Amino acid sequence: MHYYQFNIGDYQSHTKHLSPTEDICYRRLLDFYYLHESPIQNDLIKITRLLCLNKEYLSDVESVLSEFFILTDDGWINHRANKEIEQYQSFSEAGKRGAAKRWSKASDSEVIGGLTGGVQKANAKQETININHKPITKYIPPIPTELFTEYQAIRKSKRAAPFTERMFIAICNQAVIAGITPEQAITLCCEKGWTGFNADWVKDKSVKPMKGYGFVSDAQFNDWLESTPTQERIANE
Image (cartoon, rainbow, N blue to C red):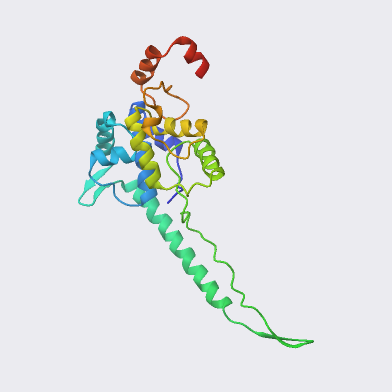
């Protein structure tokens, strides 16, 4: 499911004790869980990579999983999220049954008399309303909406293929090699007019950590401050 209700007060009351990094891990885990509607596999390294986080955050992801999820034979589950998913699926199935019933009734045809004789009335089949929120081909990555919209516009202008989850994972892998976040990588794509990203394209070049998109550690930001001349930093801001 690509949509779920988010109760800000309820969330804050259960997560005030989390560090900023743990909070990010928890939100991304929830988004991943709702998106796939299935248990999270018990492979800490793989799930951390799918969340587009570096290996240094393994302990944070493990801590959040242990506190808010339960490990089963099928993987990590979250009872609260399961209730939301079950409710969503029940509404979806009910809607499909209603649409199928309307479709069967509209399939009958009738002949209407007219000046030119009998005219067969076209089947009154109406297009079934898709109540399932899942787009069939469109993939939405866990990055800021405005950034993804800008990136999509660039890809569309260059007639690139539809953006998929596999493409986003590839960008995540290249971003890790380049030492930047996936949001920074896609931001660079927007600035340079790239439809994809390769770590070699920014090799030996100073890439400013952009706090406007995603999490950037203090260590990464301080490293950039130390390695980049003042005039260049001002020019990039």
